Amino acid sequence: MLAAVLVGGAMVGMAAGASADVADEAANLAAAGYYVAPNGNDSNAGSQAAPFATIQKAISVVAAGDSITVRGGTYALTSNIQITKSGTSSAPITLAAAAGERVVIDGEALGYTPGAVGSTIPAAQRGAIHMEASYWRISGLEIVHGPYGVYCANCNNNTFERLVTHDNYETGFQLQNSSANNQIINLDSYHNRDPRKNGESADGLGIKEGSGSGNVVRGARLWNNIDDGFDAYAFTSPITIEGSIAYGNGYNRWSIPNFSGDGQGFKMGGSGGDGPAANHTVTNSMAFANAAHGFTDNGNTGTITFSRNTAYQNVKTGFDVDGGSTSRLTANLAISNATAVALGSSTASGNSWNIGGTWTPASTDQGTITGARNADGSIRTSNFLVPSNGQAVGAKI
Image: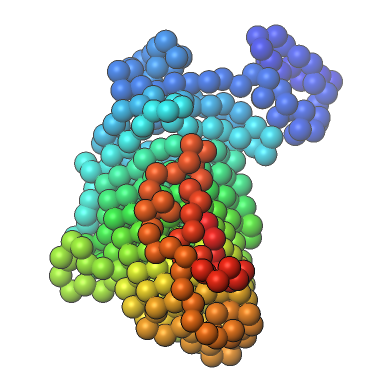
């Protein structure tokens, strides 16, 4: 028995019970490309010549393998963008800004911007972009003024690249619940704050309160958020962080009353006490000028691996791993923090404090590393905080 599949306008026979790979290949051949533009209309066909006006309309019509290209401009939301359909492993759905164009998604008119002090944001309203879906590739969007910027729950096998999330009323980008195999690449997340929780909750990036293996953060810059740069609070599966920086977090730049922001650069799980065990890995990353610790286990009782990272001028401890973890610290650099390390039951070798002597950075000018990114979205290379003695200790980005 044959099942008919529409491919490129022709009916192609496919044996009943054929593999999902064959179906995915057919979907790829038939993939559609939709367009959204500020001067579009949701009654249009969604073509390049006749684009939709809203991203939500485009999402409503895409199928596995399709793409949505968003033209430059500001998209002021009256309801948040909901992504609840999924692509497939061989036919993901793409949502991307048009090449070289700035796309701003503005959630200021949504509810809970900000919420009342002590209020709870209903789950479906969390995020200017609220996502519960898998196999998407989302890139090049700027998300501002939302009740969270991007909120992704029960999300798997997604790629988020070159997103900018700033000035939101909760965490800029949050991934939680059962979420695995997501890649967050070259994220900039800054100036996020939460008046409804007196600054206790809004981080640059949170992967928290859930589980799921294979989540990777690479090339993130997380700065001047009211709470922490990165927070893995109560996430029980290993997370990999590479080539990322967190700085200037934990200061009350908004004069929020009863301020309770934490100010950690990288908060690696735990729950503030004897938290769940999660064996995260942090490599070639920097935490500087944060209001509390640079890197902390925060009560995570697992084994966190810290390798070739740098903590500089944090108000408290550079590497704070005495909260119950048995972390392993190798070839890390701590300069000008209140304390270099609080080791507890963790082990350390080849770090600046093990080697001893005076450590001087080749450069303390952060202008390159915090300035414009390369055309491909990567952080520009510099000698910021690289040891002047040339030793292979600490991060080099």
